[in-house]
Length: 454
Image (cartoon, rainbow, N blue to C red; front, side, top):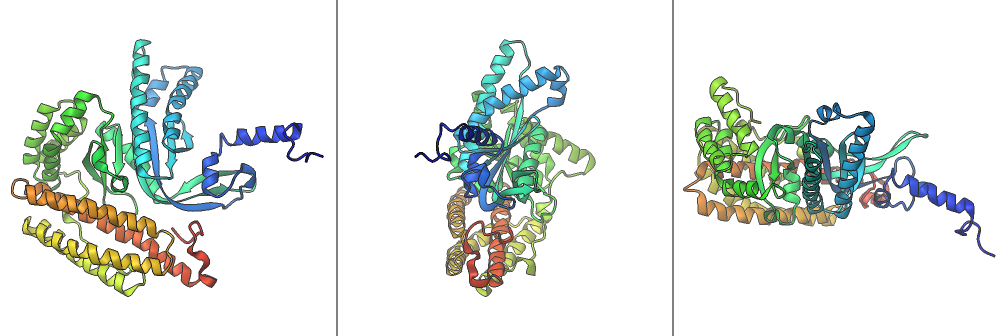
């Protein structure tokens, strides 16, 4: 006799399958899968997993003004038409739409940063085709801004007994939203954080350039932001490629508060790339600085780097190496701040060469000994930094005499961004893991998603 619970011809089972299928449109099956659940019926309040993911925020520019020209029915038809075009681009690259926020999209990419970036680039290309249709129909084109950030975060189920939803909890989400907002300031459709940039398997495969630093509430270190202009119109993309070195040097002079020299270089950039909205924004910054003395920067030239006990992970060898790193970086930053000492570039590079070899190996041995579940993430980050650092050493040997200010600023950004983030964020997570393991009976907190503090 057939089992009525497994009988697909049973009307009750068909109805249940339909309900589950409907719920999957609100709580994605992929999100449930990440938490080890096969169906919405298996979900419990508090289910969660800790994982490194990339967050994407996308938003239509000037949507309020656009919507004022439409009836409510037209508004909903337009938004749904737009979202129906963007959703497949996200899904094709392994993304999961977490929620729609009016005309905005928040999506998760659980596998790698490359998926998220390729998805974002495809969204912009789809937008180009959408705008051609709108122009043909006599409607104005629309613009969107996309921001990406990568980090360790908790994906889980929150709410109460009668109302639950899946969500991600992490300061990485706040930074992604902040970066998406920066696209308005610069007129740049796609910006990514330093964490996403360094998370790419090969950033050189994309058209990127450093844009700015941003201070995030509650953070001591500025965060670098990069533009990705792969999806720009061909003429504009080629112009940005041609002026990339010039633009980078102009930004270095601006951040060192030499606005007159920065203005000269930016004027040359704009002569070659008149539609470069970021160069236009920096030209205006330079003029305001020269007129008012107000510098719109995050102050990394004046940054004080100092070790404190909150950065300790509780392993003597690793903590001692971190403290020496802070001491060396503080000396480098002070030399830059005080007298623009170019010779310090070689000193800090020589130290980091030795540090990378010995510290990374010691850190990985320690994590392996404690069965740290995110050791593969650490090994991958170490490997990527070695690659970027080796490329940068070659850049220094080639360009120090001709572009010392640019390379000095790049050294600061590289050291402060990657090293300081790695110690204050990734390594501290290992420290919290060790603390949690010490107070957990049997040390069974070693599995990913076990819930030790993020």
